[in-house]
Length: 199
Image (cartoon, rainbow, N blue to C red; front, side, top):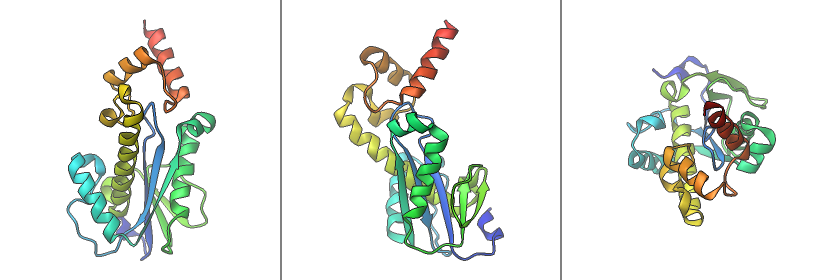
């Protein structure tokens, strides 16, 4: 089902973000405008695609999207303003970078942002709206590329594998080496507090 057809607008931007949950690295958002007649079986919720398929879809969207913008908020800012505000900032940055005029913004989830445009939040939007699905793909692949580059600077943490999420391997590396500059201190503080309380 394409819920974007419920809106009487021809110029729609989809917005999604990735990276709210990881212990390290930035939160990344994408705003994207795709043609109404875009047909590609790979344009679906990024979580339903394999890593290889996501990259293929990302390359396809870079070529066929009318416009897209990327917003990035780093881990230091996340610690300073909290992850919710950082996510909103990343989405607002991404929207501001669009070069194509839009009438309405469709945002995955229930988080509204600061914009004069009409906006609609859609829970599960990455499975219901092609433009949000496209945004989820671009944001996911873009952030994965960032974390893979970070892996060369901090190979002991395994960022290329887990992309900063709190896997068992990642947690073991943090305990062994301590946090690096890419880690979100506010997240680690909460996480290790829960571990201590559970002991």
